[in-house]
Image (cartoon, rainbow, N blue to C red; front, side, top):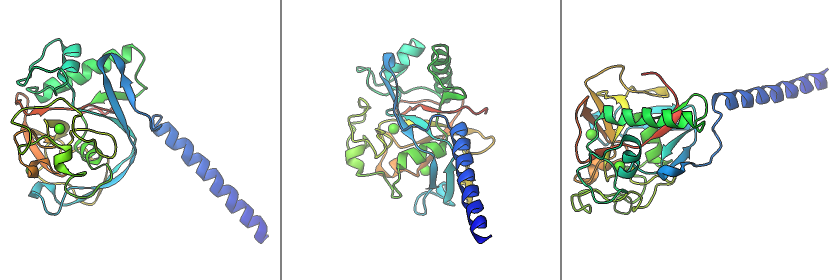
Length: 269
Ligand SMILES: [Ca+2]
Ligand SMILES: [Ca+2]
């Protein structure tokens, strides 16, 4: 009888493992850890695994608290670099940037709405070409996705040595630089610190929510969106992984504000 109970327990555990594995596959069909490319755009996206991290900081600005345990429930892809001027022109047919002269420089002088328009157009194009998995779309990353990807498993102020990784006030010469010249973080992402600030999808919230949150998406409404990572004319403090910035909408833009793509499960906002 004891043996039988033991066998039943083992079978039940095995069955639940198989069920969970199946569930996970359904929820996240793209968990294969391979980069994705859109070759005619020279666009590469790096795989970001599902997982949990501590969002925020105890020694930063007030809006970085309380430190919040965030679970990213589905793997996604994050642009290896900021969207470049060449990529922008290929999709939108113009180049609004202040710092021109090299198509590998990040696009800037784009508002939040401009960035969303780019995401929508690229999504339509790639979907029509059959290159997008069901339920996934190009989007701005949420703040949580952005910070998770920026940290790439690190818990300090930066994901490595700032001068090696970032163009910022101390070394940029007050201009943008072609993307991916500085060292990538552990997940292969360049210029998360510095070069241009990057729009995130969320409405800016004055504080983090605290506790444990699954797939945090910011405030439900507001008067500004968030941008992250610091930029060419800003100091080291602005470039910290946890630093948050409120940027106005819909028509705020500037020579130090650009964006990077996420390819993630589609959400309605
Ligand atoms: Ca950046
Ligand atoms: Ca701040």
